[in-house]
Image (cartoon, rainbow, N blue to C red; front, side, top):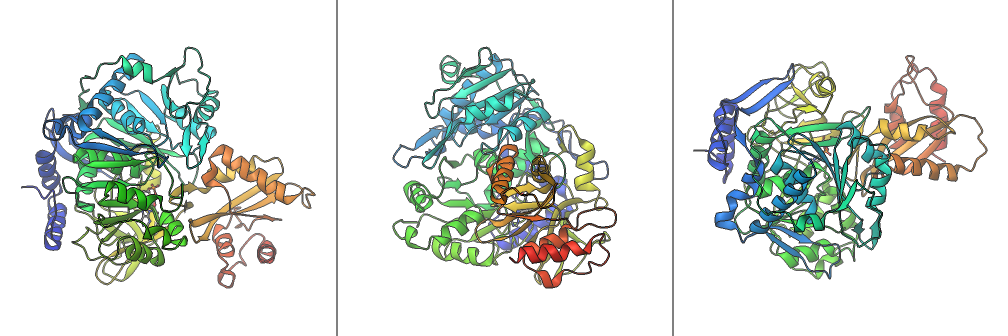
Length: 636
Ligand code: PRX
């Protein structure tokens, strides 16, 4: 018997022990009892972190959409699968049943096929949070095409580099999107991106805002008329367990974003299992994750995990501040949401508005609150617990990554006693370790180190698209025979984990992972700029914000620095997106460097964080004098 649904703390410990002692047996039982397969696997797991190579359920054949849709039709055909809440609070919500989802996914799958998309082709999806977004993922999966969703807040440059990296043949987009009181011209962004994308043959356009747009002859088509005539039946492509399901880009500390590749069977099993347990989802619950499907949280915990469990998953098009800061609470009341999963940055922004926006709404349906994307500070944790959960709904602080595919560390609600700011314990199947800088595992409790994972879990990303070497270097080279997360963590006296933050040059701003290198590259394109360095500093809503140190080519540059600041932020917006704009820009005569020419970000970070008395030894620098100057200017 599998332990698919854990109900007590003792059962959790027992299950975790079993998953460590007999990982293959553990996952095999779950896979066998809770999913439908076209053919059983020959081998549960083969792995070698030194290569690195990980394969789960090799030899098995399946289609993930049969698990997320078809198998629910008999018993739950009329149950709401996707509950769409539009941006406009006065527009009606849309309840898409499993029956209807089946038809709509198949229709789109047939359209994709008719436009020449085949198994293994890459399809870029650049859509707002509307049902067509979730349906596009599933339609790709239905026919074995690999989806690559790009968050619709990214700029045309960011979009084109992602499209080209994985050579997408098609883009699915919309004429525009609603964002609070504004509309955004998505199609215009796509048109600009595609100037540099020779690989794209077709663009399908959803009509969302009735915008007047140009359709490029031979390339662009409105989607709706194509769907109308498409059949609602589409045979599912039979996939191998290890066939890629999707690519999703995430920032690295250096270079271009990394196209993380997730494969089919392991990803399905792990996201479904963790969804069930972390949210303690029960039949008829209404579950709402506020993330965008452009991020991994949306892939795993709006689409695949919930649907594999036959759940009702809310998709929200809007923003927490429109028409006012009560919007989240209004949606919770309206749809009687039971599980609510959001990010610390949203919690902090809402907390800042005080409790008055909450007072008008009945939140008594809530059973579980979730947090994801960055460390949740103690104040935000308590505000969430007191005001939203009324101290009755446990908070699950879920730690994981794009690369891990699913939640790795988290309390189980009503089972694991929670502790503010702690992601607490590993889920079954997860074997965390803390390592010191020399690569030795730190045993025992009340210790801190670099967080690694010792053993593969089913939804680990298998590679970086087109660059396996980078995958190896980034995740498997820092420590021997371990997956390195890039995060630091501590383990308290009872063995609970707390994430202390990134130990590399990735900065998490409002829950978005940003690498410093691409931002610096964008800044350095400004003709007046010689060099730049980005660091993070604490921000009361965003968690971290970006601080840029910029040196100009001509010392004593006469230009108006405020204009220069605007131009720099515009460049960043164009290259990456508005999310990567700098909060502070300091012009400096030089950047502190080691004798080998490496920028000493540690020092810059301390200055940005106002920790000047604690700079450490700077005498070995190539140019210690610039530090004094930077400090002086920073304090002005
Ligand atoms: O630093 C950790 C932080 O977010 C990083 C992963 O970002 P991304 O791949 O964009 O995925 C975010 C959604 C899963 C991690 O390396 N992070 C994520 N969740 C938490 C967190 N830090 C602290 N606590 C968390 N609960």
